[in-house]
Image 1 (cartoon, rainbow, N blue to C red):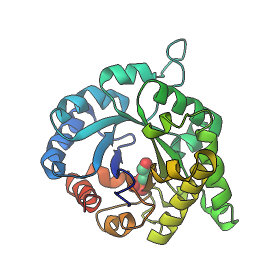
Image 2 (spheres, protein in one colour; image 1 turned 90 degrees about the vertical axis):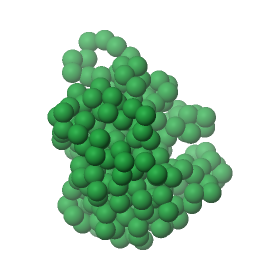
Image 3 (tube, rainbow, N blue to C red; image 1 turned 180 degrees about the vertical axis):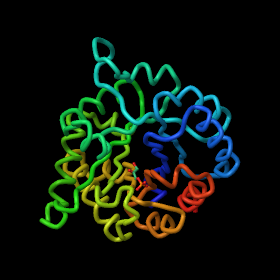
Length: 255
Ligand code: 13P
């Protein structure tokens, strides 16, 4: 992290876990454990949990996020949720382009871009995910792919809007596998993302963007990861479902 240049953000991504009642209980447990954080703290939760999560987080430093957003404001899109709906509900962050959405739900670089624009235009903070598969890494495409995904996601995003953008570098081979990227690999991946932003917006702007690492980040490895220059926090899956573990990660990013 380089806290002089940019804000560290630790965000949980609960994926398809926790009912509304369970969400309330977990947030109540987390609140006292993360209250002294000097980094930003967010929990991105299933749509159905959002009202309960916002109610539970009230008066605390925990912000609530969604895990996806549609790119149209309204219309015949059964099952989808718009950025305006999220905003009105009190949501502040939204995860976009997670590899699980790219793999299982047909998300493409184009739809990631459209969703990002919709979120930013509604005043939400977009956590945009990029990352290579193991095969792509072994073929030597990591840098090319990360730069391409980053630039595609940010097409038509203005310099001003970039202030509400967080990029999460999540190597697909590290997600939910227990295999964490080494701190050097995380720093290198995040560095490629920063370089892509510099190519598109200039070096000064790139230095101000928060770039998280995600993929089996946990209470045991968070210190080493966030110590790296380019790792400005994390997007946490499994470990964000356990209050003490999540709190340890928040503490690591608060040092
Ligand atoms: P895990 O922390 O469970 O590996 O998940 C990472 C992730 O996908 C966060 O978005």
